[in-house]
Length: 281
Image 1 (cartoon, one colour):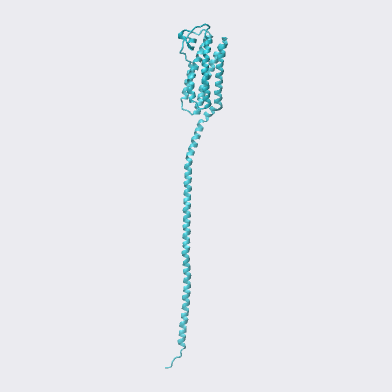
Image 2 (image 1 turned 180 degrees about the vertical axis):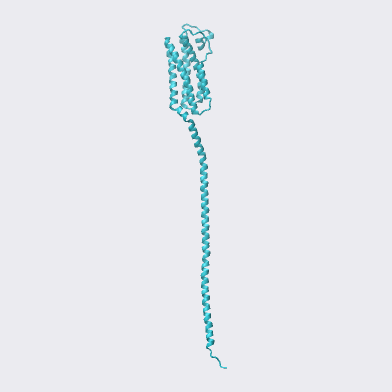
C-alpha cells in the first residue's frame, strides 16, 4: 500500500476497510439466518442482508467521489479497491475476527433460545464495529469538506444504528429472557412428559386394586351367601329334628296311655277272678 500522506488518504483507507467489512457480512449473514430460531429475528437478519448489499453499492458511489478529478485508472487497477488504493486483496481483519468468533459460538451445543441470544450478540458486535467505522469516515469527510461523501456515509450510519437498536429491543425485550428460562422449561417439559407416561401405570394399578377389591367383595358375598345357605340348610335340617322329637313325644304319650288301660285291664281281670265264689271241696 502506498504511503498515506494526508487525511484524505486515511479516509480512503477507512472506506476500503468498510467495503471489505460489507463483503464479509454479506457472506456471513445467511449462516446466521439459518441458525436463528425466532421468526422475528430471522426476518430482521434477512432485511439487514438486503440493506447491507445496498450499503456496498453506496460505497461504490463514495469511491467515485473520492477519485481525483480527471484521474484515469490503469487497466490493471480497475475495480473499487484497486482504484482507491493501488491494489486489491485487502481484508478487514476486525470484521473477519468478529465473524469467526460468531461462527465459533454458533458451533457450540446449546438450546435454540440460547442460540438466538448468541446470534444477536455476534451481530451487534459487528454492528458496533461498522458504527465506529462509518462514524469515523463521516467525520473525516466533513473535515475535508466532502459533504456528498459525508451524506452517503451518514445514510449507512443511520441504518446501522437502526439495525443495532432493533436487535437490542428484541434481545432485552424478549429473547434474552427466553434464553434464561430455556433450560428450566426444558426440564419442566421432561418432568411433565415423564409424569404423563407414568400416570397410566398408576391408573392401571388402581384399577387392578379396585378389581381385586371388587373380586374379593364378590368372593366375600359368595362366601356370605354360602354361609347363609349353610345356615339355612342347617335350620331346615334342625326343623325336622324338632318335629321328630315332637312326634316322638306324642308317640311316648300314646304308648304311655296304651299301657295305662292295660294295667286297668289286668286289674279288672284280677278283680274278676277274686270276685268269683270259691267252690267248696
